[in-house]
Length: 71
Length: 286
Image (tube, rainbow over all chains, first blue to last red; front, side, top):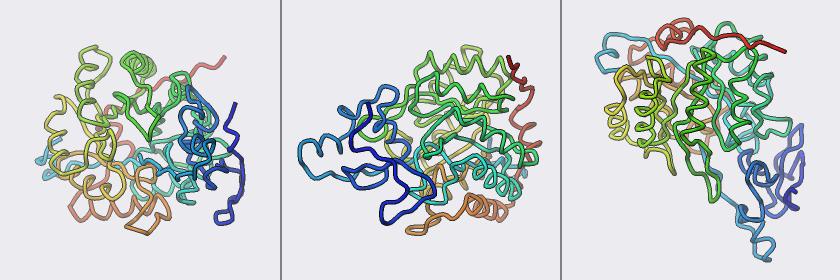
């Protein structure tokens, strides 16, 4: 099961791409390739346990944008 | 691996890491993701002095996919003259996904080998335990693939020493020392010198540092007789508020600094000789 807030879009009103990318409706922004593994419940990830944005959205709280890590 | 070697004019191996597994075009639209796009960037970087390309695979949505490394490798080999292909086996995916990086046809000449886990955000940790590390090292040795030993912190240097004792590695050991935030070694000149002091005998080292630390610490690496890695995997900004336009921009900047220091960049052939890269076996299909 994937996160119900995950969509694939090619634009968000500001950024536009020639392909669809993972987009978080709760956060109203594209998500990084790294975080998309959580959105898609890949490997041992589960968005219900591992995504603060999902939990905040479910609790009716404002979604806090997450800072992306760098490598 | 010493300041004297720098003074003696020993050549520097420059690795470009164009893509990585963390950032996408949402962070900087110039990050190359698709095979042809990556290959075009790598070719330009090869022309500007890169000897090694550290490669990641992405799917059609820009998400990580080790299985796309075959297409990336094919495109890079088609477009480039002689650059050394170094595939990733790192990241947060399972072992079976990550090992695809050393199961392309032909095998890559090099592959990264993370020497332990690191944390990201609240819930992400990479699954690099000793069993997985040794399994990858063994398969790389069987296939003649040179491992780049990724040390995200100085505890991982202990793991390099331990892995040498298993007999799975051949000299020169190629150690990549990494500086950044979180569970990476804290970026400072003092910590660079300390890491270098603790390297095993018979090692060559490369340095990568994230963001604004990329230029100063890679420069220090060259002065200390080491090698350098630059690219958009590690740094999306040329300077504060100025996004990088291409990987070649980062390669050029470092190449110019090194030239000013009197360093010459190694060709891919010279890099193979210096780092003991060679003898990769071709995959047997079927």
